[in-house]
Image 1 (cartoon, rainbow, N blue to C red):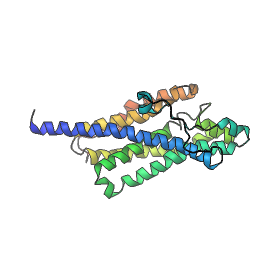
Image 2 (cartoon, rainbow, N blue to C red; image 1 turned 45 degrees about the vertical axis):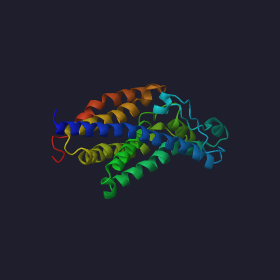
Image 3 (tube, rainbow, N blue to C red; image 1 turned 180 degrees about the vertical axis):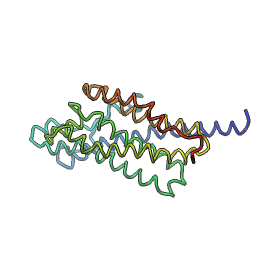
Image 4 (cartoon, helix red, strand yellow; image 1 turned 90 degrees about the horizontal axis):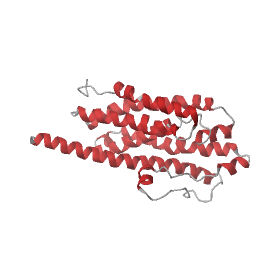
Length: 254
């Protein structure tokens, strides 16, 4: 093995160790922003006494990695019982709409700044944060739009509207955000982060696709009804096609 090959392998190893760490960090940031947006909205509207009082779950490896036991700790039943459906809908929307929405806009704007592009670790962090926010949008609309419980169900119940209306209103901007990520942000990141390493660009495409269409896309499989279950299945089946559509060319400038 030549010295050049060793340097390349060492560089790729460092890059992917950074990616693994940043994927966990940005997933956590996006997750907590989502839950605190719910809780903070409930506090501002007078339905909680402490905006930081969310459910953190057990301190074990599974929860630390996935945060699946972390919950907003908002009593929607009481809010609905008081006849304040509009408030319940607003609190439910705040998670993805405000918590993840603001992070998405911030990361998108910063990724375009030349000062950020010259700092690859910062660019990489913002790139993964943007992906996590897009994934959060996708796992609600369309994946869990027709579920009988959860954020979208609280929105439809609170506003007394059909989930089809939610899909019509939110589906287009979320579809655009996903298209923009895969058609604009991802190719730009590939060129900036791995201009001379096609294998690294291919790996990034695969990881990004699996995270959004796999990790976030399968959220409908876990107790959210037949429609969500079917949409999650379609999401998983779409992974090879999305990877093929985003497959990097031999030259990033081609």
